[in-house]
Length: 155
Ligand SMILES: [Zn+2]
Image 1 (cartoon, rainbow, N blue to C red):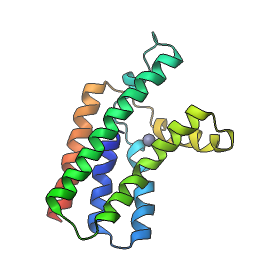
Image 2: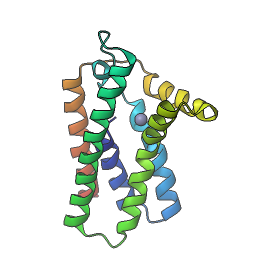
Image 3: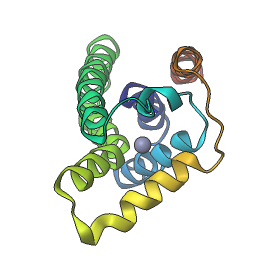
């Protein structure tokens, strides 16, 4: 899923759990739970007409845009909600983004000893093998973010 979507789950976790270590662990594992849900990014990165290099480049552009959106989302939330434990929100968000950062870094620098993590991330991502168009994926992820915000503010 997009980092922005992961951030919405991270915010929910930070709102409900107060133990900082547990929050970071939950944030990290929430990434895999969310990635496991089919979220319609299939045709985004699998354009057969593109070379591996072109795919990586467009992926990097999307990732940067996504990171900018995720940061905007997180800091808007912090600005509006003004929680006491601002740092926890930042830590849990970083933890929930970490698997994707690690994945990008491992891919970019071909870090061999972490290849297992790269494969694990991919496997979890593709476990259900349900691929659907990006437009529905965006709709699904947007609805997911709304649900997370609803749970954050109402429970
Ligand atoms: Zn991921």
